[in-house]
Image 1 (cartoon, helix red, strand yellow):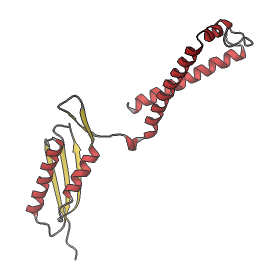
Image 2: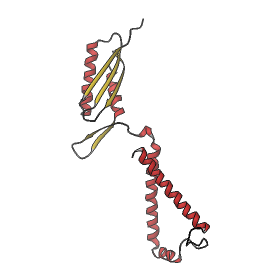
Image 3: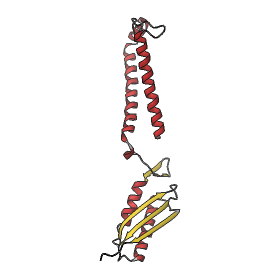
Image 4: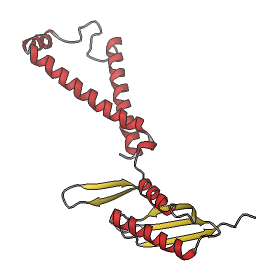
Length: 186
């Protein structure tokens, strides 16, 4: 659900609870037309029917209550999970059998950064993935040491991108690599 859908859901729940409370208050104060504030909440006919269906009526109410409690618990757990638990960007692939594989984009970029940083000539690496899953755009920035051999680093970056493509089954539609060489210490 989107944030707007969650806000709408909580607004509807709040309005239903407020409306129920207002009706109960109006009935108890005698301001609701056709309702006697001194009358019993349940009529004798309703009480007799409840007693006639004795074990099943109690079981039905318990089951409905458990379903409402489960729905409330799931809704509350989703709300409390917050933005840290949500998947912002995902890479989704259809499988050979029914189903899909979904991976958070952060996991994929972190893996590629670790792979790129494995070369001793790479001091830091940064990766950004954009675009659709089968052919994402890959933006890479590597900060190199002053003594890093350019050809070796270039081959290392291309090998890391090939491993990424083989692992994720995604061929980058656009690959942009920026290399910055840090100055040698004096």
